[in-house]
Image (cartoon, rainbow, N blue to C red):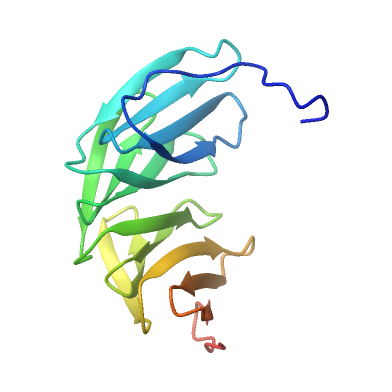
Amino acid sequence: METGKAISTLTGHNDSVNAVAIAPDSQTAVSGSSDNTLKLWDLETGKEISTLTSHNDSVNAVAIAPDSQTAVSGSSDNTLKLWDLETGKEISTLRGHNDSVNAVAIAPDGKKAVSASSDNTLKLWDLETGKEISTFTGESSIYCCAVSPDGLTIIAGEHSGRVHFLRLEGGSKNE
């Protein structure tokens, strides 16, 4: 960034790149595309490690777990997918949204994820079981979400201009 010059340019997707994430170990990155795929990249060599295929529509979001071993992707096919980054294989598909998944975030413990959707919902997921834990419904499409470093607070932004703070473990919601 200091020089304003790219170190390398990673090529391989056949359509728009909609999401990127760097693994916490800084060795790899994942990109998600409108070509319905994710690509795993070696950041040292700039080479593609693998292509992850299983979504039936654009991949809009990706997050990598703190252990750098798994990732979660969200798609316009209304699903989230949990991936094993070492093998490039899908571990599970999380179903529950009725419209595009716009954003995903993984909790610091790597055991939960949150997803934001155009169906006006924010969902909390148990990644070990693949089950939905809870749902928050907003007034309009929810486009972004994040989990606090302590894993106790979720923040989400929606199309209406509202930002929601949600507390886990019995906390309260503030807008």
